[in-house]
Structures are given as C-alpha cells and as structure tokens.
Image 1 (cartoon, rainbow, N blue to C red):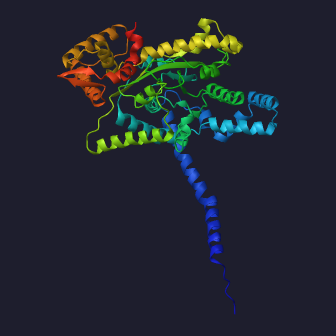
Image 2: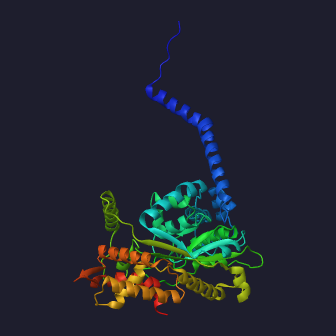
Length: 471
C-alpha cells in the first residue's frame, strides 16, 4: 500500500512560482515580445512612409549596443586613460564611470510610444491649454533639403511647454531628439523623455570625461542623421528677451564636420511665443537678488495649487485657455553651403580658431530665430500699455493703437497673423480679459490702466518682440 508524500505549503508555493516563471520564460514572454515587435514594425513602416525626414536606423538600434559603442569609442577610451592618469585612479573605475555617463545620456527611443502615445499626449495637452497656431512653413524650401541630411531645429526657449508644442507640431514631419536638463530625471518623467528620444545633459558640468562622452554621442547622432532640436540659448529666457547663444552643442556637431566628406547638416530656425508662459512669474522672481530662495516643497506646493485651481475652474466651467501658442518655422540653412561661402572647414580648426567662427554662426542663427518669433496679442498689448504709462485707455483707444502697431510691425517684416478686422478685435478683447483676470491691468472709471507692480510682467511679454520695436 502506497504512502502519501506531503510537502510544506511554502515549498508548494515556491514550486508553483518556479513553474509560472518557466512558463512565462518559454511561452508567454517570447509570444508577447513577438506580438509587440510586430506591432512596432508595422507602426514604423506606416509612419515612415509619410514622414518628410525618416527615422534613422541609429534610433532603432538597441540601446545597449549604442551604450557599448559610445563607451568604447576611441576618443572616449583616450579620455578615460587621460582621466585615470591625471587623477591617479584605476582604469576600471574610470571605465565604469564613462559607461555610467553613456547610460545616462543615451535615450531609449520607442517609435510606437513616440507616435501612438507621446504624440497623442502632446496634442491633447497643447490643444487643451492653448490655441495652437503654426506658420511660415516654406514647404518648397523643405522639399529641397537632401533626405540624407542631418536636420537640426534651432529655437528660442520660452517655456518648458516648448518641448510639447514643438514635438506635437513637428511630428507630422519627423521625430525630434531633444537635449533635456537634469530636471527631467525626476521619476517617472525620465522614462517618458527617454522613450521620446530625449538625451540628458548636465549643462554646467566641467568634468572633461563627461563632456567627451557627451560630445561623442552628439557626434554619433549627427553623423547618423538623427534629427535633433536645440535651444540655442541653453536655458529659459528669464526676462522675455533672447539671450546669448550657448555654443557647446553646436560646436560638438561641427568640430569634426567636413563639408566634402560628411552628410549635410541643415539648421532650421524655429520661433516660439505664448500669450501666457506658465512659468512667467517664477522666471521673473529668479532675477530678483533680494527674493528669498524657494525650496522644493514651496515649488511643489505652488505647482499643485496651480493645477488644482485650474481643475476646479474646469469642473465649474469657469476655465479658459491661456490664449495662443504660436510656432513659426523659418528657412533651412545648409552648413555645406555656409562652409563653401565662408571658405571654412571646421574639422581643420583648433578650438581657439573654431570657437569664434561657431559664435558667428550661432549669432546668425539667433538672428534668424528672432525674425520668425510670432507676434502674439499679449506682446502687442503689453507694448501699448507700457507706452501709455499712467494713461488710462478705453477699449477703442487700445484697438486703434493695436492696429497701428501691428501695421508698423508688418511693414518691418515681423510675422503677424493675417486675420480679418473683426477677428482681430475679438482677439484683442479676449487678451484684455485675460490680462484683467491675471491682474496685469485694472479698470479705473471705465478705462483700463496698468497695475504698477505688474510692470515687470508686462515688460516680460513686450520683450518677446523688442527686436522689432527697437528698430
């Protein structure tokens, strides 16, 4: 007569778990991976057929392959040896540090997420918050761009919304690879940015090893034709004016560029402007040396409060959008043509010779960007109220002065909306209402006048078009 074999409950559960893992490893995971790969491949084929600038093989390469390629790049290996010798460190330790930098920088681009999830989110957020407008897209000029070129969108930086707005508007043409700062490493944002093709940059790092790894990644991406987006000012505009160009990323792209041997590098100027920049008051506060330092908890509390107020207003149908968010795309600038015209080969120049020429190029790019920054209603009205000073204005006076200023800007070639008179009057009326809600102006005996302590905020919005006003 056989005897029963008994095992403890914990051992039985352990065996079940092992069996489940084996089942997943042998059947479920391979099937799921095959299913997802098939879906992703179908999306890439579908989207690739309609993009003006196709997805490059480099972007679809496994991330670990790119990490290994970057970590063992000859110039990175040279920097590792130099860093180890100068700091008397073991070579293996410095090698691990370089690999860590590579993992930090290299994105995890996912075409399915970019076009099926990221694009949908960006579109919904952009259209929820703003009336999004795009203009000055010279299609003929874009069609003349060599499809094999590396395209780089260079733009001004008004708001962190820039990432969302431009990615949404450019998604019909191409994918964009952004450089994002350390703020984007916050969980779970870092995974979202990686999937969208963004790469992380320590903006003020003086570490030569890190800078070499970053330089080689940008060189690799540029050589492989990855379409990139660069905020030429480096950071957000604090006072509304365009700042000085940061040369680092552009220099990384060009320091080894040979116009005879390499694929063309094409810069496309992009101008961005908003009727309301979400961070405007925080940016202005950062300019005040006497303003008390604000900690993370204060910033978090303010952010949650801002979101909460807007959600409550939506629930009671009192919420309104933040006006216009406008993006203009300018004419492409071929670096091959630029090099031939200027008779320069950047790859032949040492840093001391190259940097002044890079600065001249970046200044010219910045000028091109300024010429396509949209003239939005808030900028026009801010100029009018600042010019009026203590004078109280009627709505009719504001409309008349707006028409005069808009005509003046149009005559100078500024990018102003071409809309009907009635639509322009409604636009001015909506903007005045928004300014009243934000307490930038107030009503005095039936007329409108600026609030004295809001002058810096009005200057912030007027500064967006100051390069036209000061002509």
